[in-house]
Length: 132
Image 1 (tube, rainbow, N blue to C red):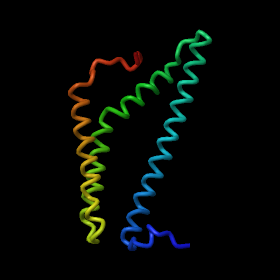
Image 2: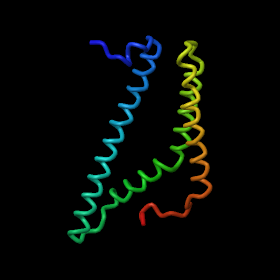
Image 3: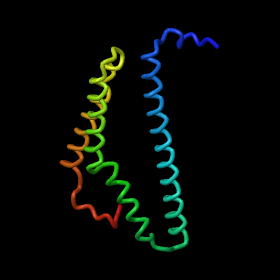
């Protein structure tokens, strides 16, 4: 089987495509799992509210943990990890890989800027028990 656009790729580019494809698949799996977990959380809370029950403390803490995970120090950690991946790509001595290094470095810098803006402008007096 001869695929025209793959015939022009050399082995270095093919390896790079496989690595990035693997990363994309892992991110997609994690995103789908998070989406399903959020949907179950919303269904549980909706059922509790429909029956006139208060929202359990464990569910309220779960919502505040999810918010902290997306906007808290996790943005700093993710930014540093992306920058480290970019530096690692730059240090690889094969010709095709080095040109991809600015991409994760720019993503990491954007995450660090987002974390900085979130920490400067975020509401520090938010009550985790009251997500409204």
